[in-house]
Length: 592
Image (tube, rainbow, N blue to C red):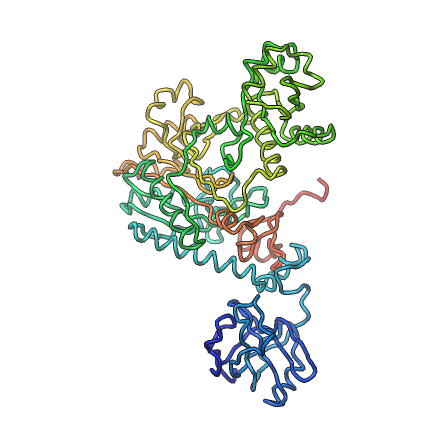
């Protein structure tokens, strides 16, 4: 370069008029007005209009004729106020322009496959194929700059609270954490593998035993699972662990962190303390353990009322140990049969066999099935749902899981469709006292609801052997606008209790020793009580920026099939690479 950059393209103002400057960046737009040539010069900080005038410098003006979109250039010139009537109020630099008297083309560019602007029609696949171009778009750059500032404020807050940032390894031993591991073959240990960490769980517990009583890390994690808008095979979480701490101190710390980063980065005030909801109540009222509490449509149990009716669908479900629950919709007075059919089809996606409904007319239940419910039962149904004239009541009858999933998802659909969810709101919620374990019917064994290292509530510990499904965990999830953005627990820190939990989960003593022997041994050397939490940074950013997908806040995301369209990963290893790793492929035939 013949001359060095002095300013970014977004920083010049009317107070800089008369100053000689050097700008460099990409040609966003070139406009030829006959004599004068105008170029919008862009870098990550913004856009500055630069002007080529043949009367000022004919050589620069000749070069300007060659410029095209995405050429990389450097210009030297003087800042001047834009002429009257040409000020651009949509640009922060809109009051000024740079009159150029020297220009250097640093690189040319082919015509991009899509415009480098925020509003574009290009498919996501095309954008990811040319991600280096997509990343030039101001919106994506602002997202990643926002991410940077958020991480800095997180570090700032935790440093003030005496937390130490410590890195943990990526090449580890496989541990059960709820998803499949990504495996990495070891060349120097033929036939053996590393696993990429689903979380730093065991290492942060080891750090507590090692005496680093306050640890944190903004860390990459890896999970081989089916993807969707809020999942990626590699993702980032804020990992926090502390010794000699209980749930209340965790809540106090995390709420303080959330309030701080929202105030500092988003300029929003978040009210605390956050509301707390027990797992059982969350499932009963909202049909999910990550409820969106920004709107109503709460689920109501009418099992005891309708079991006295003559409606056999309800009665059979109840006789099998099931439930009948419903929600009240107050904004669908003129709902059509077609719309009810659509809602029914939506409920069946989540296992419901159907959707019963009543419309409230003249204080009674109006529906083809109303004849199976006498006047007293109808009155009790209306009272239980606090129904009023014109309301629509929707019911599902089945086992607890199906009723919860179908009505919970129906509730979310209706909340969005009826515009019941207020824009620009952030509602945080702690969900606490999850079950310690759940029973897997396919594998015919208990599985940890969170992970095997979660401590049970002390008052429930006596039930661990006889009624494990009744035991609650010292676990907690942080929910924001119906999305789980964090989860954690108070950990087990005693060897015998950890061995007992392993046994409950069907992990034999031999397997426990093979997979977790180092942790069990560490417990025998004075392990302190400890606990922590992990917050999903990508999910948090998505909600803070009101985006549809976490891919918009990740520099180089994968597609929903876990591929990188830009680099072509995953790739097919060469025979030489496989030979060095002592791997022989035995792939199924196509269509097998």
